[in-house]
Length: 339
Image (cartoon, rainbow, N blue to C red; front, side, top):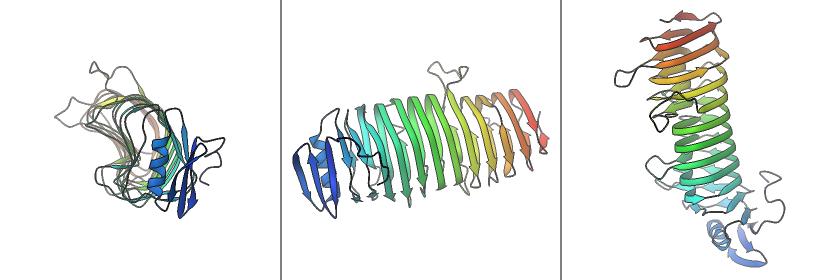
């Protein structure tokens, strides 16, 4: 069992078995056979909005996709192994509302573990992705936007790309994202507003590239009127060890506040703030790693409205070019080169 609470109570439908699977909806058996994906999809298709399918069995869906429609609760209490399907998710929710995935443990190397767009009132609970490649959770860039997305604890190991990547969400709540040995970002938030994140914890994330344990990019936090003046992206705590960058705010993102950070030995910038507006980092410690840098590219408006209070040791804090309206409160033994 991935979690003792998964499958608790009286699910409306179950998939059970080992090697041979039985899908049951109410008192009726709707599938018996060796195809794990067929057992799941048959049961999902047989339940209606407001009902729950508990997959008690472990198995492989191959390069298939499990698609969940409005109002349904889908949980996997065993382990779902998945394959690679170009451009698609192993689990997908699209143009749907009120879908809940309280528990799911996944293995394999998918294109996307989860793929979402056009969702409203989506709830993800305890999601564990022990991957050998691919991208964990993806909200699509060029599809319908999303509202009111809630995630509990998302744990991702071994993704080749990002652990969690969001686009186009208004109203995002995340308990924690825990990323281990992930190729690109731990949490990458883009074109998202009104977000509340508890913890982002990365170890060996984005090694050898410009990504970060936590990255705000592509107008993240920018309000519909084009402004960044109202802080609407809140992150309680960021922990990062090794890998590439720790925290990266870039490409006209901002309107964000990070409560506390604990960064050490990042292989790239511990923090890079570049063309970012109204960003506050309220406290924490950086030990070693790449420099803390505020910078700007000329094609975007200059970095502005930055507030940083940190203890920085065995590192350098550098502002170049000079930002507008910046507050530095740096303690520790770091070399400081600011305007």
